[in-house]
Structure formats: structure tokens, C-alpha cells
Length: 300
Ligand code: GDP
Ligand code: MG
Image 1 (cartoon, rainbow, N blue to C red):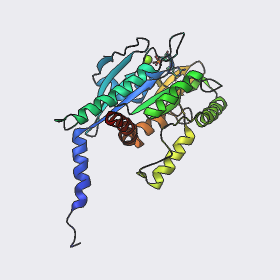
Image 2: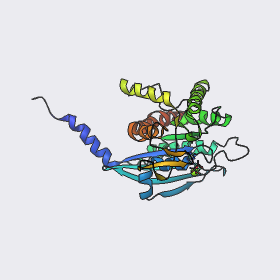
Image 3: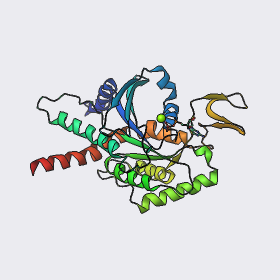
Image 4: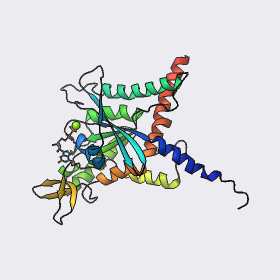
């Protein structure tokens, strides 16, 4: 066409820039000890985590009950670099009195927003501000029959106001399929009842999403929380396939088999379909809310 000047190639130009810079994803793990947090994250990024060199930093909150540990990994797939930071919270809810055990976690999230804001407001600010904001919390719910505990409700209430929370049912292999379905139903009712806003949200304020994306989010929401199984072991099935799974007295649980658990759905959701949305939603909603509050407080 004669009127064509070629500005549609801007998408390729943007892509090249973004690819060159890489992406940062900060995932935080929250839930009681022994629910399989470390195992699941190793299962999620297994192939990559062993080979990449992890860097460890320990964030030192004032309260010593919950530690916060950050491990960093650079993952590469087809020239795209993902700087993955895993923020673990060992010791969470391990005390006899768990009153306010969520404080160090909330403080960490807030501190990262604060640091970002300071850098942004700095007169000679960096071109690319290092992003340490938490893009999502994987919240581990115990595989039980009654759903959320009081502690879960208290923590989720606070977390879901400041960060994207993706709930998972931990160690789902310890529940029968009926028990799983039932627990899911109970949990969805509780989310509703206590006004806990889980990611992905159903109010797309900026109308950023296409109708297909909105429908997809709706489908995902009806599946929450993902019933997951983790394993760091690669085992052979009866057919001789090597799979990541758990060997029990009664057979092998293949974590990648969607008829056995929803691990694959969680992985696709996090890394294939919603990776960028998690980053964007953090910036446009959670960070923006924080920023507005801080700046309004300054003005008054
Ligand atoms: P964390 O304290 O939450 O980090 O839990 P870990 O990942 O250290 O796991 C605690 C224990 O639970 C280990 O013995 C794991 O092998 C086991 N475990 C982890 N994930 C699963 C799972 O999906 N199902 C079962 N049955 N056990 C698991
Ligand atoms: Mg752990």
C-alpha cells in the first residue's frame, strides 16, 4: 500500500528493547512450615534452578520470628532473560502465639514499594529502577477439610490489599479427589465471605484486557486455589517414562499429569499466560495505591 510508512514495526522495536533488558519477577512464598513451599518452587523452575547460580540475601526484619530470604536466579529461554527472585519466609507462623506474625511480610512488601518510590522521586534518578516489588505471593493452604484457619483469614486479608495473591492447596496428593473438590468449594465461599480478593481480579479497571482475556481470567478464578503437588525427584513410571513425581506405596504421582493435580495449570498461569500481567498489575494497582497514599500524606 502506498500510504504505508512502516510504524507498525514499532512492536518489533519494543520487543527488541524489552528482550534486551530482560524481565524481573519477584515471587514470595507464604504458608506454614512443611507445606511444601521450597519443593514446589523447585518443581516450578526445576530445570533452571539447578544450573543457574543462586545469589542469597537475607533481609533482616525487626521481628526475628519470620526470616525473609531472597534467592536470585537468571533464567534464559530463547534469548529472553528472566531475573527471578524467590522470597522465602521460613519460620512464618511457627510460634505458639502467631499474633502479628504477618508483620515482617507486610513490612517487606511495603519497604520495596518505598524504595521504588524514593528512587523514582530522586532528582537524578536511574533510567531503569531496580524492581524489587513483590509481584505475587503464592499462598499455601493446608490440605484439610474445613478450609481457611483464622490465621489464614487474617493474613490473606492484609496481603490481598497490597499484593497479588495466588492461593494454592498444598500437598494435594494427601486428599482424595472428592475432598479436593469439596475443599475448593469451601475456600471459594470463604474468599467471597471474607472479601478476600485473589488474583486474577474480576474488575479490570483500566479495560486493559480483551474479552477473551477477561473470560480466561473468569475460568481461572473458578479453578482457584490450584491443588498442587511438588516433587524434586525424577522417577520412572510403569511405562518407563521419566517424570517429576512422588513415589508412594500405591504407585507414582506424576506432578505433570493434569488428571492427578493442577501443578501444570499453576505453572502455565505463572510463566506462560500471566507473567507480564502480574508485573503490570503490581505497578498499576498495588504500587500506584501505595504511591498515591504516600504522596497525599506528604502534601497534607
Ligand atoms: P516448606 O517448609 O514449606 O518449604 O516445605 P518443604 O518444601 O521443605 O517440604 C516439607 C516436606 O513435605 C518434605 O519432606 C517434602 O518432601 C514434603 N512435600 C513437599 N511437597 C509435597 C507434596 O506435594 N506432597 C507430599 N505428600 N509431600 C510433599
Ligand atoms: Mg522451605
